Length: 151
Image 1 (cartoon, rainbow, N blue to C red):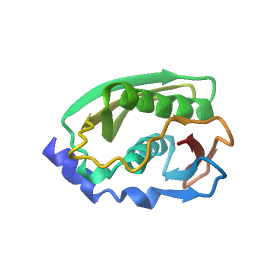
Image 2: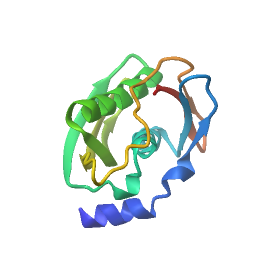
Image 3: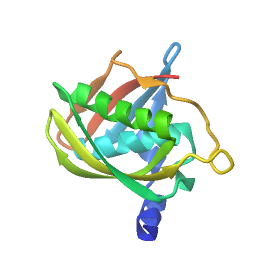
Image 4: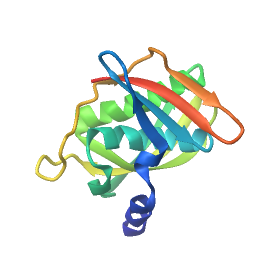
């Protein structure tokens, strides 16, 4: 687990996402080399938007699987499941290993730890990922997603 934490510290989280203005919610654009890295980066972005991901440890892991009719809905289900886990058990994601993926199915092992009020500063609470303007764009050298989150 220590090696995984060192790898994440070298992984420049904010280099693969940027916020954009949205009237009442939080807009974010996430980038990845391909769909797998986009889904990983989107999960890490959610954690980093809630708290400083650099202080989230790799204490435990879980396997998560989601299904949907298309890639946009799959991304929304994936992030929605991670938010559900945070809201019901306080689990913060610090890293992701993609195990299996298609345009309608995603399975990954997530690493992280329980939220601790004394250790993690909650920057903002993300309630959900909306369907509004949700878009995944796959290009030859980069894959991007525009996501609006209800805060």
